[in-house]
Image 1: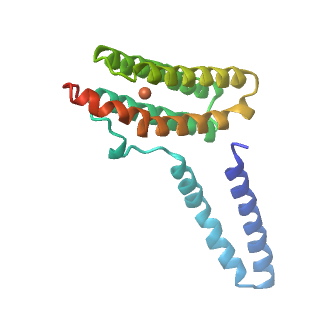
Image 2 (image 1 turned 120 degrees about the vertical axis):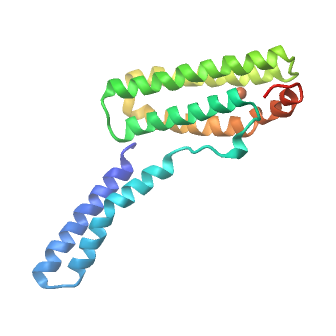
Image 3 (image 1 turned 180 degrees about the vertical axis):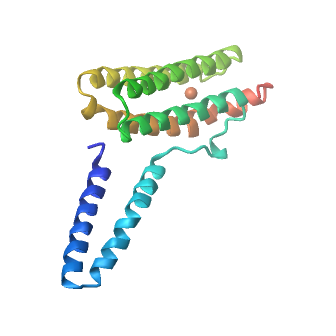
Length: 185
Ligand SMILES: [Fe+2]
């Protein structure tokens, strides 16, 4: 499933090439139209891929530089994993990209939790529970990935993307005012 858009584009390319071939044989203007559309396919492929990538928005900021930097790095690492998957790089490279997302997520959670704990943030226990649930879910995905890479990686990527953006925009925003009012920047 993860290469569905690539397969669709390949089939489209094949169809357009066939139309162009028959079009030229029969002298139809459709041949030229098919050729133009064929030339646009690489651009269409890049556009589809670029839309998948996560981009940082100011609205994601929690007002604390180190945590914003962590969140930016996590977006970058998820995009790197996405690139490894969709450009079908070496499996070892893909696994490395996956490990980096998982490792840096844990590093970031530890940093965030330490700040909340230090400043006695009242919702710290609930926030920590969300982090723990996420790590447990990702570990479950990674176990499945080891036995069924193709059946797992797309779902894992979607989970990482959706969970992270949802968490940054929701739960993380809740500590922002509390911590910044205590001088954390
Ligand atoms: Fe968090």
